[in-house]
Length: 393
Image 1 (cartoon, rainbow, N blue to C red):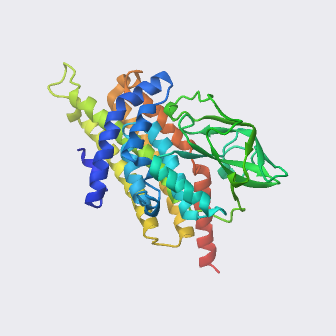
Image 2 (image 1 turned 90 degrees about the vertical axis):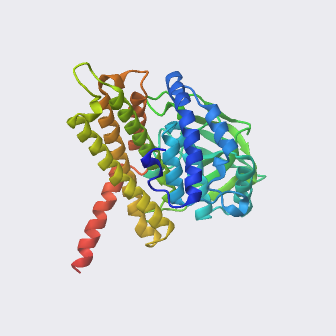
Image 3 (image 1 turned 30 degrees about the vertical axis):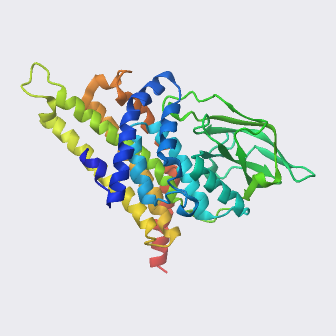
């Protein structure tokens, strides 16, 4: 067991879980590389996680799930990402959505949420949101969807529209789709086999290929009345989203995997001009030390933010800035660590046969996952001004 893999384990239950998840992650590494090269999808990794019961980790215990904390979500997602970052990010969205739905309890039809919890716990079904559109951009920016829902005389709905970045689209069992309903943003829970709903394979990206984040297309999709589960309200200030920590956890997992690759190479590579492997060279020691420093700082931040949320150390609105800042710091550190690992390995790391080139491409996707860096930095700047104004009143 690598020293850093259990660095933040708090109890024996977590230790047992992370070791089992670690076995899965390590077994995924070869398949993740093949999936990336073939621009495919690791169906077998999803099935392994279903059999393991991982899909119900954030379902409350009263429904048969594990009811894990945000701290544990970070812990397990980070380890899983060391083997298959694309699958980790994808299943992380599912886990985050289930946590969010139960935390916020916003659905007007409580029985719909109860049913979703039960079916995920019993049969390991997968759920994700389909909210992003090409024309409206990221949902976090506040754009209105161009997917439209029309209410019929009998109370049913007809949906038309297209969603982008539908992560894990080949294996999702339910989509939570946002649509314009009479000028308001409504959410619909849609089973994958609904007539008029299809997945169009459009995911042609440089990285995170294995997420299969294709387009979800709705063409005259007829939905029953009960499919409408929620109508969104206007946002007021910073919205705490602790479940989004699954995102930086994934990218820190990539950084940890990159570190292992650098150590593996440096401990084995010995040019005939040296009497020992390059890992003992002063400049390599310095780079490894810098990697350790950056990882420790970023990981302590994200685990601290997660634990402070679980313990409600401050009111949720005040913790929102910490959660967002932790993501930005983690992404910056993860990209820096992968870059340093590639410097240690050298040109070998650019070979399409080497996992580091995939990690380099995958880790950059963290810049485009919410919350966005510019929005976080702007929010922190405004908090600073508010502090100044408050002190000078």
